[in-house]
Length: 127
Image 1 (cartoon, rainbow, N blue to C red):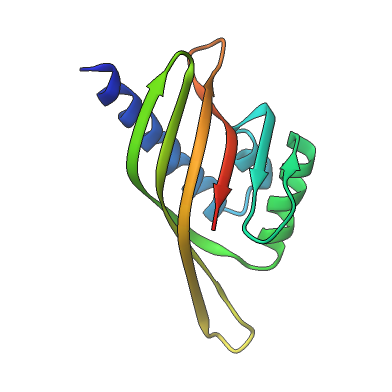
Image 2: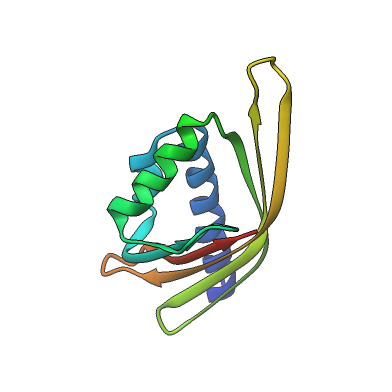
């Protein structure tokens, strides 16, 4: 298996696990996918840096009922301890009347290789 194939497989596995943690509403588990120095850049919001702030952001989002998250991988590459993915995301929320509102957009993540060889998100931006 080539390095490109290995990186694509690893990031695909990360996406599956990240979606599962998101859809379980587990802010701590979602945050565990981020590097200690990570920053998220939510569409229309200020940048959020550091695990405590990132976890609070996700917890707030989950408390609003957002769920059904799915990442569609489009492109992956890696070099010198960093990797990136470009893709699409989708999620939704059901209002008090039971009406589901879906939304989606594009995403890009930059990952940093950790001492144990795993990848953790260093920068996560979406629109």
